[in-house]
Image (cartoon, rainbow, N blue to C red; front, side, top):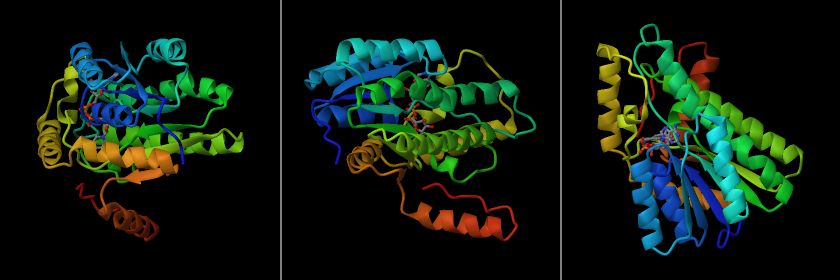
Length: 276
Ligand SMILES: NC(=O)c1ccc[n+]([C@@H]2O[C@H](COP(=O)([O-])OP(=O)(O)OC[C@H]3O[C@@H](n4cnc5c(N)ncnc54)[C@H](O)[C@@H]3O)[C@@H](O)[C@H]2O)c1
């Protein structure tokens, strides 16, 4: 069991949704929390809320798609919080539509945050964690979409599949070198957050089309029906403590994974998933 009290938790995408809930959950465990996000105002508000609860907080505007920005975050965590013990690479954005219609820029934006953001987090924080030799944990936020591809969401799904593969490679490598650092692949289903308005964090505009508008509408409806982010954060705290690798957030996904494997082995295209 990993002891959390008195340690340092780093969370990216911490100004909203699952990341914000993670920061609160780790602070409630008596951890110092280092929070990073691209949205400065929301980050300040989150910092103020955490401080009001008595937490020790380091907040920094970070763009996870930029390696140097994540590197500067890690340096501040080293200098001010004596390094990270738990790192949650959580920031993420969504874009969808027909694969043959959406501009490559959509794929680049989503991959930049959802895949490279996680890679940058690993490269900025994990070497220091290995060097210090303290027991620690890395949590990478993927999605049920990282296990079940769904039509109309290729940029998002491809980024989450790639991130899941990256996460599994990391877990194997840390085990091979004998580092006392666990890894959790967090694959949430629908959660009530701001993910349906991801474009608020996008510098470059690409026009919508009927298919991308359809999937944006579906996502907004699903998210509205989703579980509160605090439920997901509570599962993550337990996964970190127990050293669990795969963390799903809905019971149905285990059956869906088996069904998908059977359908693949039967030579067909797996049926479309139902995200609950
Ligand atoms: N909400 C869901 O239903 C759901 C389901 C599965 C997975 N997820 C994943 O959960 C994670 C958190 O998303 P959420 O649902 O809480 O959405 P959210 O929009 O509420 O939070 C995402 C946070 O990431 C930040 N962010 C975006 N781009 C960034 C960048 N370049 N650098 C730093 N921060 C950036 C945003 O400002 C925001 O605060 C994402 O990886 C998302 O893909 C969400």
